[in-house]
Amino acid sequence: MVSTSTTHGTGYLEHCEEEMKQLFESKTTVLFIPFARPGGISHSAYTAKGKEAFARIGIELKGIHEFNDPVAAVQQAEAMFIGGGNTFLLLRQLYAQQLIKPIQERVLKGMPYMGTSAGTNVAGRTIGTTNDMPIVFPKTFDALQLVPFNLNPHYQDPEPDSTHMGETRETRIQEFHVHNTQPVVGLREGSMLQVKGDKMKLLGPLSARVFLQGQKPQEFKPSHDVNFLLDSV
Image 1 (cartoon, rainbow, N blue to C red):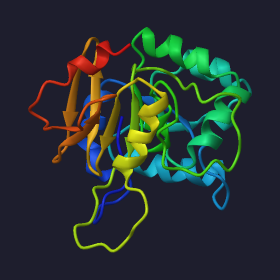
Image 2: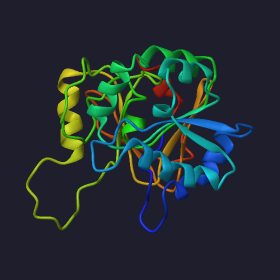
Image 3: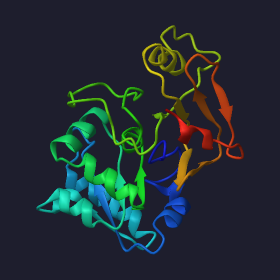
Image 4: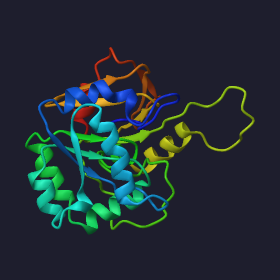
């Protein structure tokens, strides 16, 4: 679960290339879901961009829109990557294509899953902590629930010298916790969460900000134990 596909000064997926090699080791093809793009770039063009990045690590990327049966494509996939864009649009399309349960079932059986941005948002319990605007309405905010907590990719800290008087990301997540109990992980740019079985690690150069209902936010470095988040109820 990667915060972003592109960090400052790097190419598409370049900053997480080594982690991709490890995740997709021994895989020859990865199924790409490009549904998060709200226009301006076609599914084919988005997939072509991803193909270039995956070709660098010797893996063929195939867009799910290239298959006649999307459900069968998920059921037969070696691995999966869901890219960024608008989280509301992505989730609506996942439900419309009846892909929620097939993805859950495959990941439960060990299929490698990678998401960036919106693809990371939908890996959590709900999409209630996305930064995106609700340009469309999915049938529910319930997401893939591959992990039992919510995520906030692109998490930003307040600028000390800023004169902006609007809500910070921290404030909005605290507002979320007035009505919701699950933890929220704020992933800064360049950070990612790696889950293998019942173990989870924070990867990347930065700490993550973890929000628990009724508690002060906590900072967790990559060296810290974050496995307790997998036991969230």
